[in-house]
Image (cartoon, rainbow, N blue to C red; front, side, top):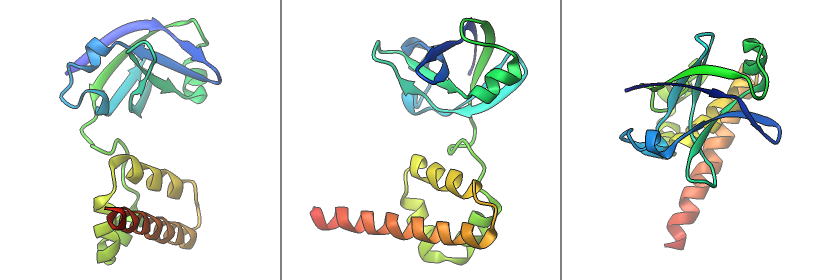
Length: 157
């Protein structure tokens, strides 16, 4: 389903956002958990999720770099489309992580148990690192910490 609309860019604190009504969100199968590809003014395309507003609606955060690329500011009108992201993670898995998971059976098992949000956290953390060896170390540390959390939860049951 493709949703098209227009609205002014809003700003709350230090971030910009577009508000999405609950009525629109509930039309999607995964409702609030839906990942989207948001295209703004046919210039900027971003993969995003929804955040909840206190009024029952939702919003999509728009990074300042996208606002600059659009040459827009708070209060400016934008046209945007939302389409469901076919990738359940909403991001591509980096080659270093794919290679690691292909070689480490235990690491793959732990990774598969993580929520999509925790998987994205790992992916974004390794994307910031340029050194391959440090990326692998970060993957290992992250998966060990997640494994320990899973084990701790099992003991508490």
